[in-house]
Image (tube, rainbow, N blue to C red; front, side, top):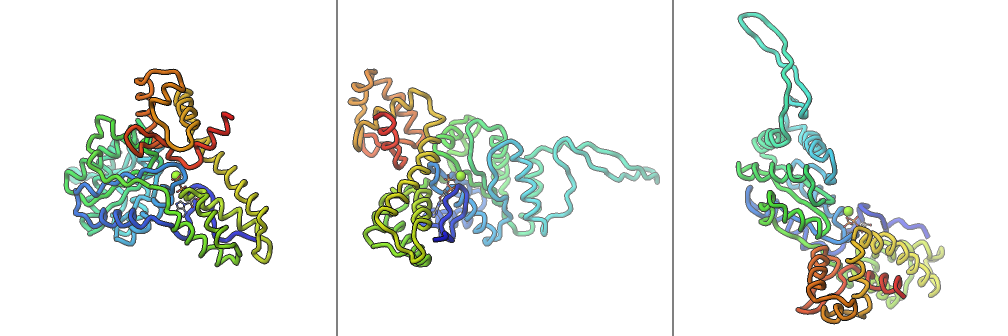
Amino acid sequence: MTDTIFVPSFGNRPRILVGREDILRQFELCLDSIPGSRERAVLLLGQRGYGKTVLLLELAERGKKHGCVVASPTIAASGMLSRILEKLREDGSAYLSKQKAKLAGGSVGVLGFSAGMQFQDEVPVEQSFAAQLSAICRELNAKGKSVLILIDEVQANHEELRQLIIAYQELVGEGRDIALVLAGLPAAISSTLNDHVLTFLNRASRLTLTPLRISDVDMYYQNAFGELGIRLQKSDRQDLAEATNGSPYLMQLLGHYITISADADGQLTADRILSAKKRALTDYRRDICETTLAPLSDADVAFLAAMAEDEKESEPAALAGRMGVTSSYIQTYKRRLLQTGIIEQPARGKLRFAVPYLRDYLAEQNS
Ligand SMILES: Nc1ncnc2c1ncn2[C@@H]1O[C@H](COP(=O)(O)OP(=O)(O)O)[C@@H](O)[C@H]1O
Ligand SMILES: [Mg+2]
């Protein structure tokens, strides 16, 4: 069958956003809060495939409905600052007077009059990003519009990001009506928070994307498969929902492969269901497990591989024995990996994987 519902690719907006009501409610609070309040800056943390990018797109839309002029999600990469200004000027064009200043390094013509003599002079304009953002904000706020800036894929030690946050902090100090949302992997966000010039960000609201509830996934499958005309036994559908482990990306992958594996009548044999699951997990391993491990050091991966020998939870003392290292070594790596959000500490002295299927992936690699 042809798939007209599932969108198993990064940043691809699903027709329905499953189970993020809490986050969206928090965001509404951010928009409703008074300018300058700490809720105005939001940090959106989540593992790969948990829906940070698609949530930002949703927030952009909600912000506009709320009357904000929005700089739609901009990736924290070079050129980010000028993109933000461009986007605000574009979205706010109905409220902004004609652009007077050019970006730093550019120049504008200024008409000057002196003793009855008219001359035209080229005045170089070296307006900083902060000054330009401030001017835009002032003008929009005066017309009753607030400003919303959304940043995706936050990177640690990013100079332009630093400049943006400093400019934001200054505008908040001036009482401007502006809000900022930064999305990224937990590790990148926590390094950004540790940046000594950005301590201001510690007061931001922190929203962490957690796995979706299996019952929400099942409900979504029920509606989606129903609409597509796919006939699955309830127990098969529930198995699929459970197999997602709450990962939105895997939910899209499984839904997609099930759909394209169904025959014209929407029927699937047990074999086809199994092979659809395999295909989904192959993609998931490549796109999530491999990319999660890729930036880690060999020592980090060795720590995770030692954890993967445990079925569920691991204990630091047992890991030290297994790896033949000291407990302070274990503490160091434990701390590092907890910060990445790849593992979590469900209780004192217990560690477990926070990325679905990463344990299985590592266990298979080492078998
Ligand atoms: N709440 C959700 N409901 C349905 N699908 C989602 C949801 N969140 C994410 N997705 C899907 O998961 C995939 C990954 O989403 P994306 O926003 O790119 O993740 P991230 O930016 O966190 O890596 C996309 O295919 C997207 O459509
Ligand atoms: Mg993303």
